[in-house]
Image (cartoon, rainbow, N blue to C red; front, top):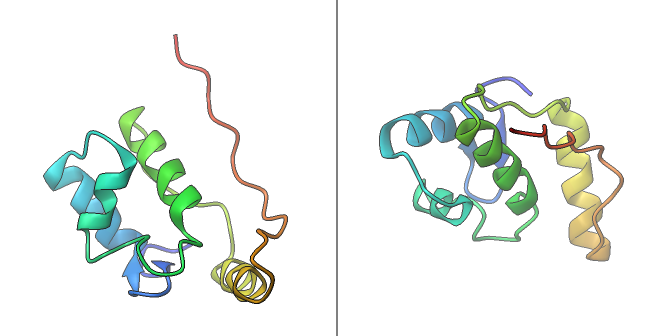
Length: 97
């Protein structure tokens, strides 16, 4: 996913906006990302991905999602139709000491 691709497709919140928000506001918990233009409060498709981004940021990593934006958007279409999350492979959390 590129920086200007939308993570929250309902409210068109890009990866770049989320990164900037985390850098500036330093959210303590993933749910605070909803304060960034309402991310995650529409259909809720992006909530697990917002959690992944927050986890990466909290670990000192540059938040990223390893998906092509087209596959990500297609996954949301499937989710909206069925209510079930398709098999997009989410990155495994890194173990921290």
